[in-house]
Image (cartoon, rainbow over all chains, first blue to last red; front, side):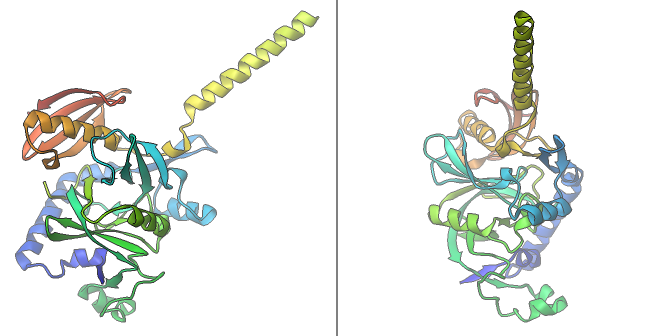
Length: 235
Length: 105
């Protein structure tokens, strides 16, 4: 099975030129429109030692992970109350808060921490899980192959494994019968959970994406909420 | 003398209780120790609004998407929605009660 990376999305691999241009224009327009809003949004975590909310950026995230070998508690897998009319098995992604919810019976959901698209690459919509893969193959886009010798050796596809950027599992998101080229996938950079780092894919810790993968069914509804999104899918 | 010691003990206990209560109030629960400066509405409240807007717009709920939200005060959120191209604004409280759904603009 072939996985597709965040960077494949950037390259618009396999898409007609007009579609790529349209996506590019939409992303640019959204970045210009929502840029100041997105730049203003800042993830913060509560520092129990100083009793203050502090900005949670890449540097802070790396430091936290180096000390604790896991993300802050809010971004760890947990069951939370969740009032919804959506049926159990529905996935709801809150891109702004960096949470993915899997709806459970009885007014509850399993909440996982996620990393999402960086400024200008966020998207929102209602899609579904079209297919899944275990330890998916990652194929770097042509642009990356051209500039990065490390990527060049994987031009034909990097086999799944612990060093693969897609991590342990990938859930391929479809709009109707069309692959959106967005995925929910694992990561080799677990400290990025809670940050805006990707090119539009939803990244999770490998343990979490394995857990999610074991609980969902193909066809599961996926609602992506993202204020200031660059693109809308399926609505 | 004994009465004075009793009063002192009572005062210490009262202060300890007050400190415990104020500590609980000022520090969020571990699962709430992350937030965004955007202060968007919780996802479940946004979707409760979407469900209510689907009824108001008479469209399938799969065609209603929250597009933005904000806290109005400590107990209420405003949620902007796109219902198959029509814009709505919804007010929902933190208990999950939808207060209103009105066409935007």
